[in-house]
Amino acid sequence: MAGYKGASDVEGILDQAIETMKQPEQQEQKPDPEQQKMQGQLELEKIRTQSKEKELGMKLQNDMQVRKQDMEMDIQTQQAAAQAEMQKEHGKMQNELTVIAAKMEADVQTELLTSQINAQQADRAVEGEIQKAIAVAKIKVMEVKEGKKMDMQMKLVDKAFDREENEKDRQAQSAQPTKEG
Image (cartoon, one colour):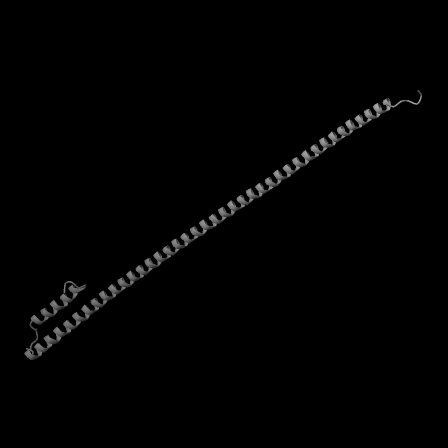
């Protein structure tokens, strides 16, 4: 019994009952031995009952304490699991946000690159148009210059032809006899 809480109280009660039974009664009359035996058995039974009640009470208290500790452990375990789940979800959400941010950054970079490529293509197209316009203008200038040269050459040819004609006319006039003579 020494293993139970309050076992010393139970042992004290048992020792007291045994001592009471050992002491001779100081009565004038000797009680009936059968009655004494019954009374001793009743006392012993009473002590046993009290001892069992105390033992049951301690056991019940101990069981309640164990259950309370079990419940507290269960609560702590559930709280730890809930905390771990919250941290897991938080981490998952952070990962998702990181992925979304990376995708958005990639989209922005793609749009920027596409815009730069489009701008370069537009610049090249404009440059091509400018080069084409310059080439056309050069051709026109050359045509105009060539045309003026041709005009000048034609004029020179015409003048040379006119001079020749004039010269022929003069020679023809000088070769004709004059009426005076």
